[in-house]
Amino acid sequence: MMYARSEPAARQPDTSARPPLVRELLLVAGLFLVYKLGRQGANGHVDEAFHNAGHVWDFERLVGLPGEGAVQGLLLRSDTLVHLANTYYAAVHFPATLLFLVWMYWRRPRHYVWSRRILAALTGAALALHLLFPLAPPRMLDAAALVDTGQVYGPTVYGDTPATDSMANQFAAMPSLHFGWAVMVAVGLIVATRSRRRWLWLLHPAITLFVIVGTANHYWLDAIVVSALLAVALAAIRLPHVTLGGVHLPWPSSTGTASAMPAPATAGSVAAAAAAPRTARALARSGGLR
Image (cartoon, rainbow, N blue to C red):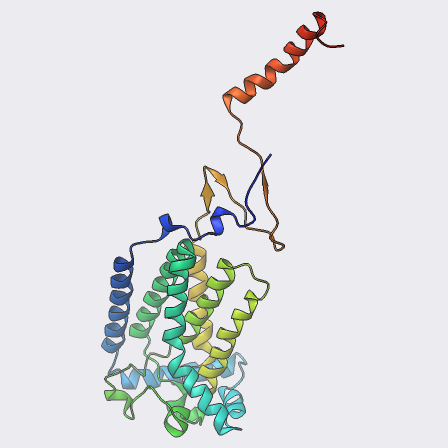
């Protein structure tokens, strides 16, 4: 028997699977630029954005989704809590996703390529929806009667006049990439690692969902739609199997014990095994075996 190491080769950083760094930097920067320009291109559809917001609000009430105000009510009990929520919304979204990609690139190159493809597909689909379905967030909708926590308590990433905001498209609520990226970060880390505590990464999308709804930047439906888009991307873009010498290498067990793998048979070993009985009989007849 031939035994694999306690940390199989498939779990070591596979430099052969790591794409060139400069190419990846240019690719990620290019995708980000296209996304930002695309969102800016969707600016200006103010009337349509508010019209769609009314439909989304009515649809959520029709299907029995809880009001976003119930979550915001929990935040508004504490000035400190609402300030932390605004900070999380403004400061965690991009850095967390960037750190996730950097770590995956160096430590799990195969998972990095898979994750980058899914994030690109998800972001592209979201951009298409931003262009096709401009949507004013609930903080702007009179029917929702919610507080714009960013403007009232700070910090905020948005300008005072949404229609002329040159930094961000405030009418791109559907779907929520804050939530979609957070879910993908959690999924990617859970798949790429084997720690028993890896499921704690689900706290990131859970906190993100609480924050985006509580600060009135997104509807529940924004998170539901991006989750559906992510599910499609995960189903369409599969993580490739890791193999070594044509033999599938299993994941290490939770105890970190070695995985037994039979040595591949060769023509010589097969021939030797077949000749062994004949050799034994010849030795017996000649008195070599007693």
